[in-house]
Image (tube, rainbow, N blue to C red; front, side, top):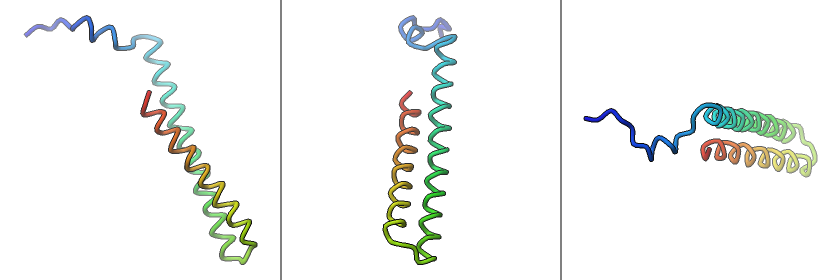
Amino acid sequence: MSTVANPASASSQPTGFRRFWRALRQLFHEVVGAIFAVLALAWLNVALRSWTRDVAYWLIAAAIVVALVFLFFSASSFRRARRL
């Protein structure tokens, strides 16, 4: 068995600063996705509390719409981190 790496596969691997920068970008997207997921849960909590306290329906709908937007941003951020 040869321990020499294939030059074609070795050149496609990022090294040094590029590898660090890719890991940093991936971590950033994952953290932002987690923050958006927490914010979406908070807005869903607001919508649920509003529903039980007999608030206007348009306020409940607004809270749900904001939560859905945050969920979309969370999913897209995690997807972008996965793609890197």
